[in-house]
Amino acid sequence: MTAILVINGQTAKAAASEPSYAVSAEIPDNQINRKVSFFDLKVTPGSSQDLKFKIMNNSSAQHQYLVEVNRASTNSNGIIDYTQHGTKKDPDLKFDIEAMFPKPQKVTVAANSSQEVTLHMTTPNEAFTGMILGGIRVIQLNQISKTDNTKGKNLITKNQYAYIIGVQIQQNTDAVKPDLKLRQGVVEKNNGKTDIAAKLANDAPTIINQAEVKATVTPVNKSNKLIQMDKHNMQIAPETNFDLPVNTSDQVLKPGKYTMYIAANGDNGTQKWQMQKNFIITKSEFKKLQKTAAATPTSVNQPNYRLIISLAILGALIIIGLLIWNFKLQRRGRH
Image (tube, rainbow, N blue to C red; front, top):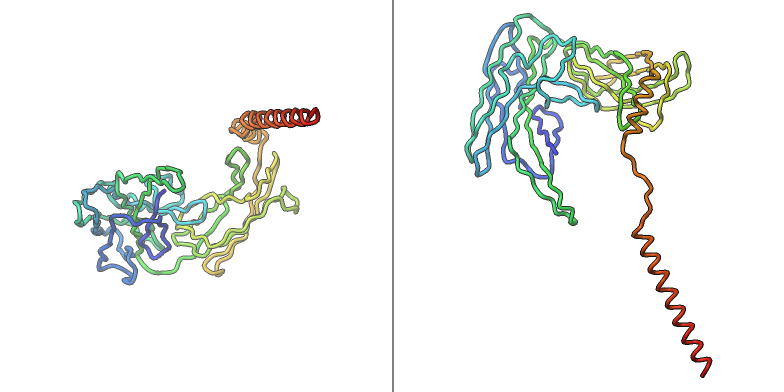
């Protein structure tokens, strides 16, 4: 289990117990919004500066921490994700925040002490509008596993905590209009059945907040709805794409031609989009997916020999009891 504690004013994921360390950003002079605890920076083309933060080790042992700067992505649940480094970037991404910082590094912090970490940032030489978004991820290495003996389960769980300090870089605060697009309908394998997903992309350098998507799938040139899906309260990172699953039911689409319709809005309904794309499920894709399903281990109804033996013993005892009872009745009759 991994708990993500995001220091950017947004909701954080957390587990039951608290980590034994914390991080704190040192806000610089070029901070746009000084009320937030993440880096919200106004920069000039080709500038460079040092971003500083502290790692506080609150435990009685020395620990080592991995520090990395990750570009923002959007996961399949419609949530901005800062946890992956070096992943495939969107082809339309103009400036990669990972290229503006040094490579991931390890930092050692003594017991019950703090360590200041400095990351040198170099901004693009070109002028740009909108934002470049990412996060500084800090995670303690070799976190200890714990045994859970609740109700005799004796399960070993590893609660891994990671802190994210958001990094938002702008050259100006001019508003940028979001640009949501449906790139294609995607056929995927998931648990041995055909899954349909909408490959959505925010091509603009701005966040789409409070995004809502209604997806419908029909046979091509027909109106009967085979699949419908509604997704609410999403947040889509700038210049990212993601696959949004649309078939939440158990319905399986057979080989054929289909149309995916997307009705979406964002920023409290102030932005609206209507999109559609045709896609095909080929026979070879369908057969391949069916083979995957056939290869997936399933539960087989095997005889319950323990139950059979128990019932046989019980039946034998009943018969023996009846014979003894009948024998006693016969003896009483003779007397």
